Image 1 (spheres, helix red, strand yellow):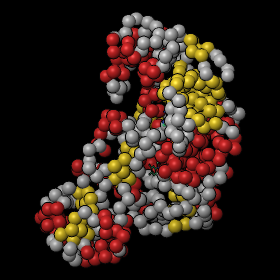
Image 2 (cartoon, helix red, strand yellow; image 1 turned 30 degrees about the vertical axis):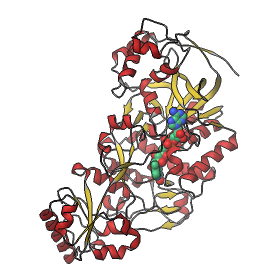
Image 3 (cartoon, rainbow, N blue to C red; image 1 turned 180 degrees about the horizontal axis):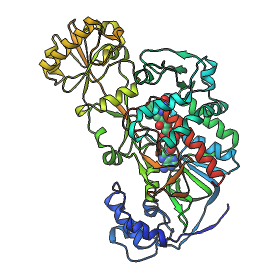
Image 4 (tube, rainbow, N blue to C red; image 1 turned 120 degrees about the vertical axis):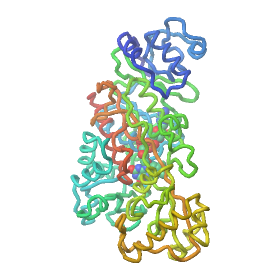
Length: 540
Ligand SMILES: Cc1cc2nc3c(=O)[nH]c(=O)nc-3n(C[C@H](O)[C@H](O)[C@H](O)COP(=O)(O)OP(=O)(O)OC[C@H]3O[C@@H](n4cnc5c(N)ncnc54)[C@H](O)[C@@H]3O)c2cc1C
């Protein structure tokens, strides 16, 4: 075991912290502890680490009673590492896997710590899609595509909070990242799966975006690259890559805090292993890749409360998505961005039915063309409706055409539109008017409101009538502000030396406007992960 001493002094930064208000999502107790820490001029470890970190040096003035109980150990300002590596990666999902492999390939000794008994997080259970334009897989399938169109599309979807400085390099590098992933053992067949409903196929290429809706002059392009084995395919590739290189992935070892030296550089982590605390030095850098915060109820209630308490909405998170990375980085001075944003995706409901139906909000107004767009866009549209209420209304002809398999999803059935409206808590007259108007468009073959494709304009006329409440699943968007090299930045835009963030705990590829479709998270995770790993290894 290699031992070294790190002296943790904090004069200048303690002053800075005192002036900076505590992040508002800290608990009352955490705020008190933070106040004590700053009074003591000690910020080597953050609040959670300080709470559990015996012997990490908490000497100073008398703390308040509550904090004193938690901070009973006041050891020296010296920290002895239990182990040392060049690069420590917290979390082995897609982003952490990419970071670890890239760091190793750039000459670093690497340790991965994961809180779970089965590392992989959301990556391991996802749909297996990586979005890309201009890939070798597309070329092999005879598809001409280009990065500029993809970039324009993402920009149009994300609106004002689009991060050009991050998305431009991501779109440019993703074709090479897809080849890199294939080099790790991922399989993506060069087969195109045409589908009006844009469902994710088992593997291959599919049309996963709304290009047609935004750029009618440009043909839709299959940019969804689906791995064989879907999320398991990603995990297999990263696990193979790590095993081939002999990179250790230490399970059930959550990182609980970061360690900064007197200059503010992140020099290691505190982790928990078998109920004991371990201190692991990271001579060149720490990569935080711990995922979303969907499963942390307190964080969700604080940052994205609108997704809570709405009966029909549900989280698409993984149990490990506790926001540990976001909280650790915030405690150590990172600028947190997009914490109040989420990505909304239509949850799995009958595609054949919904595309042929009429969708209305709580005021019985249609709000879009009901067709064509990927689930992610549909989810975004529901989120934007008053009270996030949206219903899919259809008749018995549409039900019969969709087949028995879709019957289970029906929530309300009635002999008349007015009775159906009452069951859905909608205004009966307003719904009857909306249906009459929609049936008029069907008769004319022209949708005067949203230009729905006549193929899907089917009148709602044969009783009984049916309704399905449309709902979305969501994922947190918020994370550390990073630069294109995955350095974590403080609120003044300065790099926090030695600290990198990748994947879902780094913000930049999503906005609250429209979700550009499946596969962007993995493009982002691999882009940021590889940059983080490479720069940490090279000390850049
Ligand atoms: C059902 C579902 C389907 C999806 N489909 C797609 C899709 O097809 N394409 C796409 O691009 N996106 C998809 N997404 C989103 C995507 O999977 C995630 O955004 C992405 O996987 C996040 O990757 P990550 O590496 O940042 O985090 P994760 O993959 O969640 O990995 C985080 C890892 O960190 C570990 N961890 C957490 N806390 C700690 C800690 N304190 N210390 C150490 N380790 C810790 C976890 O155990 C986990 O292994 C989907 C998500 C879900 C839930």
